[in-house]
Length: 466
Ligand code: UDX
Ligand code: UDX
Image (cartoon, rainbow, N blue to C red; front, side):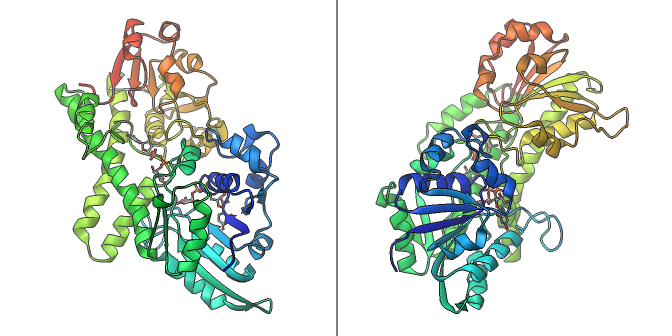
């Protein structure tokens, strides 16, 4: 097998876009083309104005700026690109199934299957197919079957395939830094030549000892397990946060004390409104589904509880706001600070803000939402149209506002849900002056300057502080 000259990635999303941009940046001799069925998305990736890229990630504009047009391309020509490539990454979305067998838990693999079929049809010669999407264990076998059944002679030419699993561990908001200096790169597969070819790409910038190789199933399961362990830490600390609030302890003190134990470590111990993002919940539910499938009921129930506690935390915060505002938020203005599922991203998938805002809207609140990167169009997709409420007078409404002062205008409370840096530097006297008294700050991320808010006359609730 010769060295890799042309890479194709199917799926120009939060994973495919940044990952391929960094590969292209670090491997100038390899042509990298990202393809997507969504023409609007591809056009946005090709926008001359780098501020218009469809994914917001710190540093991504610079990377794309360097490589685009040189050896990084974005295109809708899926089949042509596959035909010209030695390696095809599959990085399409794998949402939780909403109906049918495994609804609510299993991953919907229809896009992965469709991608495999397209590869089977369009590939020429020998092609390495890499699964990048998070997939249930043994999906590689499905991809392999589809490819093999098509293998042989496409267009009169002999074709063959090697399937690899190469899960992505980047976190949104730090995607570029994570890709440029990963803790590890994991490659699972059966074909040593294919593994070596992919490893040689990563070795252009990742130290060889950080490139781990294993078999396909272990690689697939490692991704689910990593996300399950990370999410479990968040549910654990959020459970302790509620306990701290009830008993007068401070969860940040507890986190500091336990994090100093090198066996536990200090990361991923921040209490908050619960985890969001496209991966954690989906991957745990997937794990739960698979455990049940293999008859491991206790193991399934154990992991399921991580998700249950996450939902409970979100409900708990919505209820707490209502209770503190004298048991009703109907007709009251609440300023919502942050809508993305974490700071430094425009992504709102599974954002805790969605569930919390919906609960408050159901109680009749008027939400004034500010987020530096999330568009009003996205909020409307997540919450329903701002301008088209249900018509029932008891239902609330929402609208996006451009700044913190307008979120606070006439409001009884500010609810901080995403830890954007600017929320740490609020001009509290100015904000307090435009709110209705008694005014509250509910800080679900412990991000704001609570003493400054108190000094300005607000009552303050901080997650995990008793
Ligand atoms: C996705 C998965 O959700 C995640 O589990 C996996 O680890 C990586 O891929 P993400 O990149 O965040 O993550 O998804 P998304 O931003 O939705 O991007 C997927 C893209 O694939 C979309 O732009 C979609 O248009 C495209 N797509 C989907 C295709 O081009 N072809 C298809 O058949 C299906
Ligand atoms: C996660 C994994 O970290 C990454 O390795 C995997 O590839 C994809 O899933 P991501 O979802 O992008 O990445 O972000 P992450 O930083 O893990 O945060 C997930 C959620 O947990 C966010 O809602 C975040 O606010 C929350 N979180 C994280 C906490 O509430 N407390 C913490 O201490 C850490």
